[in-house]
Amino acid sequence: MSTPTSTIDTFLLSKSGSTYSILYPIKDYSDLGGAPESIDVTTLSDHVRHSVPGLQDTDNVEFTSNYDKTDFQAGKELEGNEGTYAVAFGSSAANKVGSEGVFEFNGYLTVAVSGGGVNDAREMVTTINLTSDISFSTTEITVS
Image (cartoon, rainbow, N blue to C red; front, side, top):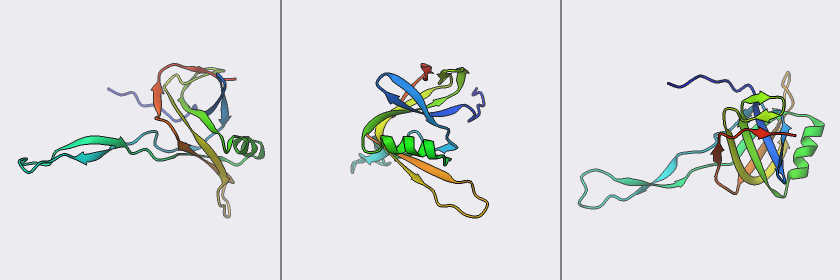
């Protein structure tokens, strides 16, 4: 039986060397994985369609956050270079995150300010073009 959990204590992390830090607070995140494509292997002698899994269909990952000039500048400084990022669920101590799992990946980060309107929060969207698989770990991360 699964235990319900909350999105409270969900963090977007960036890695520099061997040190992780919280990039900035996020409001939402996209799917961290996807279903594989289906490769049809049905032959003329089969009576039902057969398939095997193909490539995993994983899009870029996106994160929405409130616009903050300092956070925006921090994201801009990461653009143009491949980096290591992680999404950590849960926090067990002041500087420990990932008590409910860590999803780590490599990619190229881009940050842009979202359009706005009357009575809207000013937001920015961070997109990471993946260059690796998304790996899952149950090991907590110490953040600086």
